[in-house]
Amino acid sequence: MACSGKAVPSDLVIRAARADEAAALTELAMRSKAYWGYEAAFLARCRAALEVKTAALSAQPHFVAERHGRRVGFYGFESLPDDVGLDYLFVEPDCVGQGIGRALWQHALTVAARLGHRTLTVVADPNAAGFYRRMGAAPAGGQTSELEPGRILPVFRATTAVALAVPGQSV
Image (cartoon, rainbow, N blue to C red; front, side, top):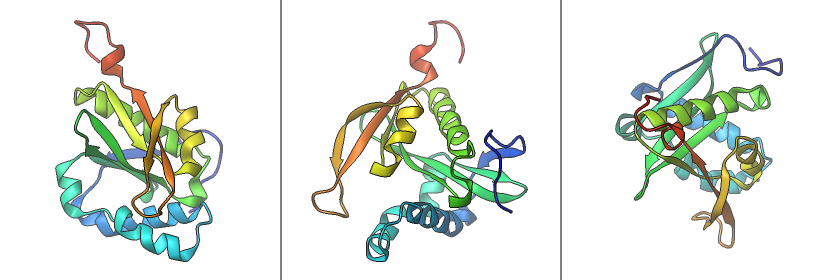
């Protein structure tokens, strides 16, 4: 079933990822990465970096967006020395532009805040930089790609609700 419409689908459900979904989420990430038109050789090098490991699903929060039982996107966190990072945020190619990425991003900010993180850091694909800007994330430099010599990946940082909350009030 293809996604349609401009608004976030009213029947979108975001739930915790399950350990048995690692392989399916890896394939979703690969399809999403291919959306940008990368060559097969580059995508093959990306596979190891995009592989969702069962242990990661248990170690850090990961969430799946579903519509009518179909996985249409997901995200996951990674620990950083000074805060938390967005390790994954991928949407099925036929669902890009339908508000699913925005819903996942907002969910990630909320979860990061509930976990006590003041910021959420993203090392993004250069093609996704516009998305993160539209989501309100601020540019925070660049990071050299481990897969492609000379390729610089944009880094973004977003403030979570914890940093914006009034002291003494719950988020």
